[in-house]
Amino acid sequence: MRKKFLIIHNKMAGRLKAPMLGRVSKQLERLGAQLVLQAASSVQEDIELARAAVASNEVDAVIAAGGDSTIRGVAMGLMGTAMPLGIIPAGTGNVLAQEISLGHKPKKIAQTLINGSLETITPGLANGEPFLLMAGAGFDAQIVKNLDHDLKQRIRKAAYIGPTLKALAAKPRRLMIEFPNDQGHVAKSYEAAFVVVTKARLYGGSFILAPEADLAKNDLHVVMFTNISRFGLIKALIGLALGRNAHMRSKVLEGDKVVGHMMKNRGIMIRPCQKVRISSNEAVPTQIDGEWLATTPLDINTSKATVQLIVPQAS
Image 1: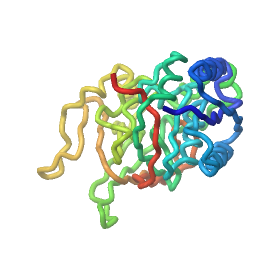
Image 2: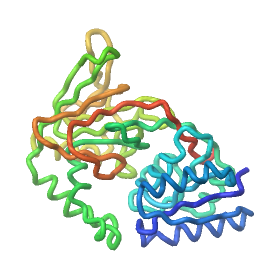
Image 3: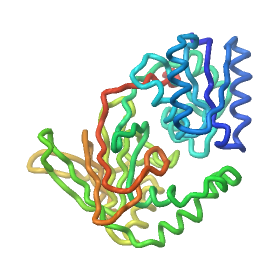
């Protein structure tokens, strides 16, 4: 049972959901927990506060209260340590909270933070930067690059409408996806208009992106939208929104070996791997855990560092 918590909260994220932090804190105190709250305004502050908590050895767990970016920052400060990471979903997307079925009831969240199980997860690395959920290039990275973060604080998910329409109207750019073998030689390559490399099943909170992905497994699932046209990309995105990625049955073979699955006539292919390189003849935006990163090329691989994530107990 965990009783002493440091809560690191993003003072800017999810203002309309700020009451979630207060409600969960009250539930924790009713259950006898001792809380210390500290505000952070950047990923670097998240990291530093988390590392200081580990060094102090005065708390049973560190809680990230905010969106997936805040959680990523706190997790970076805890990587490679035994300090548990808990989350209070107080951001806009809260993808990780949905991935672990945390729910939105303050009492349940508080009970999970105190009595929940620990799951060892292994972040991925994108150009050396850790991510808990996913990294990508193309469509969604273009959206987050054009996102007005001040507007996001005021109108939350509605702020994504303009950047999404702009990204859909743009001509898709051709990406090269290469799968190096253990010797660093490219074993296979593909072309796509949009790529997401994920450790999570879900995308955007509730859409099934990679049905066989598992945060606890040290592997990656590369989701490639292979139809390089505006219409083809839109068609594939509609299929994703309708849940068709959950039913990918066609096998992708290299010789006699099954290396992935694809959806016939839908322009989506999923391939598990340990490392992948995404490049282009032009600079294409990239993102990690829903935040703008840089432009291609993007080298993504698994890591050896781990994070101890507090998850709901199995019923």
